[in-house]
Length: 99
Image: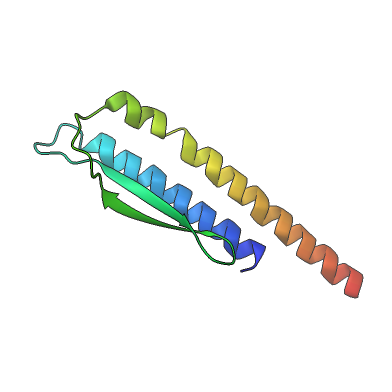
């Protein structure tokens, strides 16, 4: 897998984590609420796969936990965006060298 695809998969996973956390916050007071989690796994050759699953643990809704979960995805997205940017710069430099 190329660096651009690896970075893009990380950005998609971060976006999914943010959307899932927002869903959990929006539905905390819903009767019979069951928290959603994002399970991530490394892909062979690089990158990450992410999917939403219902939490396996029955627990009380925790607004603080969900609020704090909102801070991680933007940092993960920014890191993946930087990888994407660096890979694009390196590709441009390689083209310049070959020209």
